[in-house]
Structures are given as C-alpha cells and as structure tokens.
Image 1 (cartoon, rainbow, N blue to C red):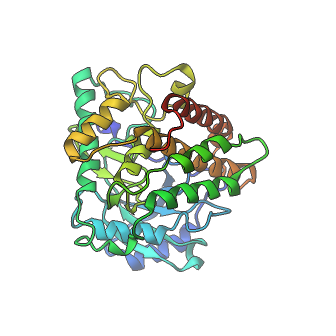
Image 2: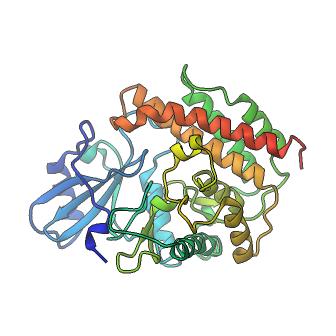
Image 3: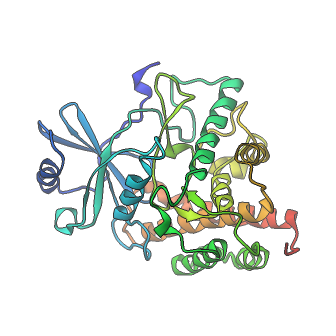
Length: 360
C-alpha cells in the first residue's frame, strides 16, 4: 500500500501560529533525544482543539492545544485529556503515548501536551486517492471500528484507575442539562432555537443510566487511525478530550450522530464527514444491532440516544461557529456551520416525530 495514504499535516493556518522558538526550547528539555531543526506544520482535521506536527529530523511529535479565544467552562482541558490517555494506555492498546505535558502558559499561552505520532490513514469525508474498498472490505472496516468501541466499553473502570471520573448515577440527566446550558451560552442571533428538541430530551430521558464504563464521547472515523499496510485494521484512536466514565449508550448515540448512510437525503449527505455511505458500510440500524450483539448490552430507546447525540453535535458546531463569528477561529470552513446547525435541528425534529412523545 502506498505510504502517501498516511495522514499528513500542511502549513499552519494564519492566526494559529505557535511560538516555535519557545516550543523548541521546551520540547528539547522535556523529551529526550530530539535532534535537528524543529519544523512546524498543522493537521487540517479537527474543528475544535488544534493539532500540530513538530518534526525533529526523522522524528515526528504531535502537539494538542486548545483553540484560540473563548473556551467554554471545562472544555478543551488538554491536561485532563493527557491524564486520561496515560491511564488508558496500559489497558487499551490503541491510545497514543503521551510524551510530555505543559501547564506553563508562558510557553504557548495555554496548557498543551505532546504525544507520539501514529503514522496511518485517517478517513474523512471520502476515501483518500489511492484507496478503494469493495463492499465486503467496507463492511469489515465498519465491524472492526465498532469492535474498538465495544472493547473500550469493556474496560474495568476502577482497574484502569479512572474511577475518579465517575460522578455516579445520573450521567444521562447531567448530559441533557449540561448540553442544554451550553446551547444557551453559545446561541447566536442567526441560530435556531432547539426549544422543542430540548423539551423532548428532558421529557424522554430514561429514568436511569444503562451502565457505567469508560466512554470516548467523540468516537468516529476521523478519530481512528488505520494501518497503511492493512487499511481495515485500527492502530490508533485519537481525541480523548471528552472521554469520561458514563453511559455507554450515550457514547453509541454520539457515534450515530455522524453516521450518514447511503439512503439519507441530499441535505444529510451534504453534512457527511466520513465515508459511511459507501456500498457495504453498515446502516445506523445495523450499527446498533452489531453493537448490542458484540457488547451483550440491551439497547433500549434508540431514538433518545440518537437525538441526544445529534443535539450535542449541534451544540459543538454552534460553539465553534460562535468562536468564528467573534474572530477567535480562523478556519474558513467554519462559516458554513450555521447551516449545519440548522440542518441538525431539522434532523432531530424528524426523529422526534417518528419516535413520538411517549415518555418511557
């Protein structure tokens, strides 16, 4: 397989530059064995935290930092993300190795961490040039990716040392309340209200959590690294910022929010960020059925978890759009997020209409 399939960074976007001299001095002191002149580039993927590659000769490191400008509450906590990754690494082999963390804001003006680079393929909206999957391969890739979610949910929380992330029963309620509050804080004058969706989620939420496990909270194809030599094999899982201990079905619902399938209409296809429309890719119903069979978990009110996942995605998009409107985010693609948020409300309302309003 062609090495050109590996995900590669590009030039740093205007307004998102780092002080390379300060960073170089810090990294040489914190990470042993760095030689040669430091070269800085930026990964185009990701719409919230910023991810850079720093090359020292043949050795490549990856740096994660929060976005410039306003940050919402405890969001974008890079040191927490690094701590979760370090705790998970011994029990979940797909976590990149954290090499250094920095809480000294005189270096970059914010906390950040540096990790090993996992060289591989990251799938975004479409397959990269040079990679083709037939229907059987696409299906197997789906199953392999879902298996990594099932594997994560099977980890013993306490044995992994992540019990401190567990706030006890009521995870679903806290999520519904929390994302509703975040929506109000991020609302702009050109955003839809989401009032009907929020009311439905509060009324429909299950009386108790479905379980307690480690959840990723942003599990999707572009947070998964595939082996260049075998593109059906997962070799890394990225972006652990929102990982916590909570309800596994909420994690599944969040993953389904990104899952656009072949039969979806043009409006949904326009939102697609991963190649789940390809022949052989599982439908959302098949994802749920496979997850239930592999995990042994009963999946109850799928509509609730799916609408909650879509609403959460809308809030995240709205937060990014708000930062873009205020001039704190420079990626020109963020200008289109207003339309994405509006479409997500329409999608939520359509699912609510299909599901009805009976409280379980």
